[in-house]
Amino acid sequence: MSWVTELARPEIVSLEAYQNAAWEPNLTRLNANELPWRVPGDDSCAGLNRYPEPPSNALLHRLAALYEVAEDRVLATRGSDEAIDLLIRAFCRCGSDAVLVCPPTFGMYTVAARIQGAAVVSVPLRPADFSLDEAAVLRNAAPPVKIVFLCSPNNPTGNLLDEQAILRIAAQLAGRALVVVDEAYLEFAGAASLAQRIPQQTNLCVLRTLSKAHGLAGARLGTLIADPEIIALAGKVIPPYAITQLTVEAASRLLDPSSSPAREERLEMIRSERQRVSCALSSSPLVTRVWPSAANFVLAEFRDAATALLRARRADFLVRDARIHPELPQALRITIGASVQNTRLLAALA
Image 1 (cartoon, rainbow, N blue to C red):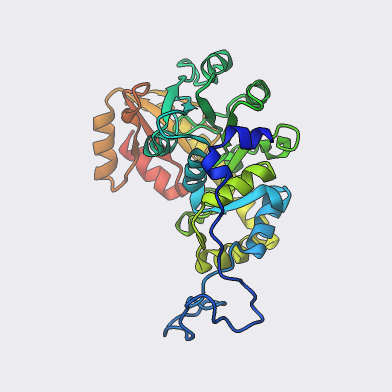
Image 2: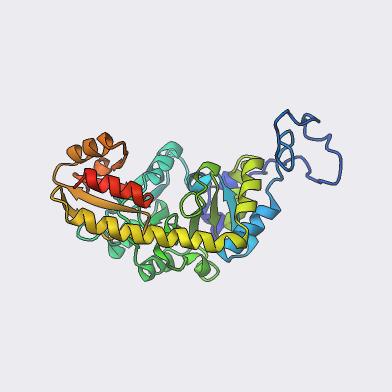
């Protein structure tokens, strides 16, 4: 028995996955209870009256090429949120197991754990710079912790976590817990992905998404990158036909390598604007601190966050209230927009 099957929920290990109807596009489909005609206005390539390929080999090929990993290490999910949920449901028993999070961080790790009935162990980032407290993570990652969630660049603080610290944590927890690194904002940092380290560190999992740098938030397409055995286990839990035909077609088309130059140009524009917005906020009398960011947003601490929120709204802007995090009592998270939008917001907060 492998360490994955020993760590996972036994009922998931023994689960016989749902079998989709056979998908052979060259044959007439009378096996899936579909309507034989397209509805008026359906201009999709495959026809929305048909279930999509489960999963789409073309899409997996595109995602594997994009992230430079083998196809058997990739699972397409409905955003990173679904990947988080799948891992917790596959590995954490209700009322027995736990996940570890490092606040302030993305709230879905805790929400998904609570839904599953798993406990949540909290090991805060260091308050001075929101760096990872490696020793504290390892002290608190004893059983019943099955999954350690680390977000890098971290949301909402924007900073990259120390790569070597993450790898040391994963090595120390090998065979005992998964270390899941959420790289939703990695493209804005220009840093290398830890996905390339998975073959050597098999308890390491990486989450990627097309919602941020690729501009496909409405398509809801994320990617779990992990050891093939973990991918197979999560594949038992994901619902059939999870990725819609419209998403498959849009992503397959928009992930063509020819789109890379335009994407890189947009990323560089965001990085440049991020620097401009950070500098301008730092000089505002309303702001007491702006934290360094490697993402497409900046986190700023205000003298009076409520007043800043009101000023932004009066200028027709919504910014994220980060005060829900106890560690950030006067902080707001501001997404980097287009240049003209940033200029208007900065004027409102001047």
